[in-house]
Length: 247
Image (cartoon, rainbow, N blue to C red; front, side, top):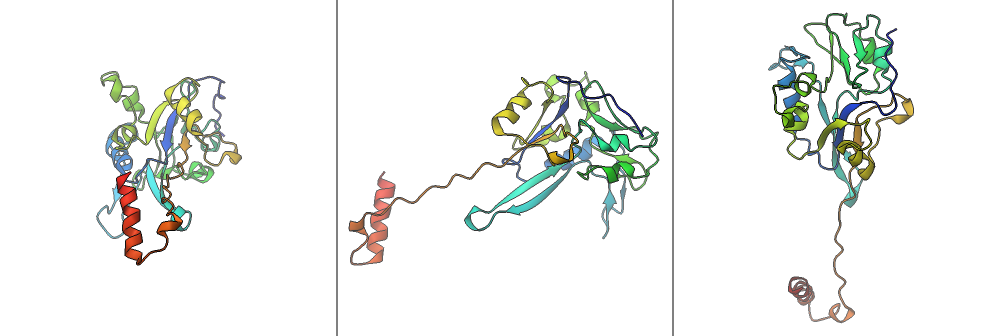
């Protein structure tokens, strides 16, 4: 078993806040993630038969879409999924070689490909399905929060963010220090009621999800009883439209 430094209260915990209310399921985050990480810290991300009938490859970020609710209250919810960089990561403790590890300085969970033997124990231990085996290299790959971007001092400070955050067209993804209660991401979680994914398992995922808001529904103006009767239904409809459009 692999040990890691315990989380220090108030210590730095870098992670993502994902807004399920504004995510439109465009997959820009997933494609930007793969494009950047294909040659970066996690790369290369190999593919088998990418244009064939049964393509196979490792993706560090995926987006799933679900239909929630029924009738007029139904809606489509798009759910991005990647490593949650847990405070108590089971994937680290089960690793027999020490390839999976959690950085004490900022809480990021990473994989040392040179130590990974592809046994799959970390993938089985992860309840979020956040690890994928590279089909060519035979080693585990996962979200790194783009460590080679956020630590690159040659980039402008505004660009030292994960590729998925920069690519999101609706700003549904936010990056920052969730260990700091005064950070922008922590305030966003507090304001919107951000939640953990499967908190009952006790792994303490650092990434948070902002739940979808209730949609705004406008009630139709009541039709006075005097207008409810008349020579024709068409007259009643036009009367209602006159009042609606006339303010």
